[in-house]
Length: 117
Length: 115
Figure (cartoon, rainbow over the protein chains, first blue to last red):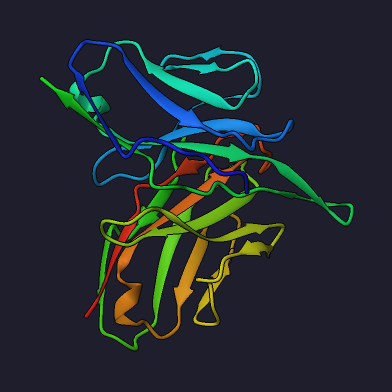
């Protein structure tokens, strides 16, 4: 699995934008960049994913560098409910002897985001 | 939005006992997963399941663990003889086609405590 590197923790003030960075310098051309988050005492929750172009959804935006070696998850206006661990994950399909094995989601330690009222 | 449902939310058992954790994946999904998270640690992959067989498993998923889809809706994780170190939160997840551009839907977890 290609690896990602994220800061251990970040802080943000409530109602301000948050930019969560992720480095993935060994990314392959077919790796999708996924972001999940885990709120306290809950299961992981999908946030967003992309391949090459920037992506927006109702939860967040994903900015992908032109060389794809890094990406940034953007929360446009942090709320207290956004305090969570955010995981940047790469996913790819692997063709094992003509039998495609879709890569499971592998979690790293992530970035623990604190939101200050 | 559709949900993955897990029962029970908490399970307490004695060391050496068998436990079965239950999950109801989203109805049209074909790929199913179990993960665990020991308190204070990262979420760890255990096993993936497709077409009534294990498609991939981690080193954690040894002979004490098994998974089953006993009917068209449930997906279970069995631990045959629980150990203290099996105490963790266990998450079930599902995805429609298991592809790399799809999202996984996770349940809210079962907290297993082995005494």
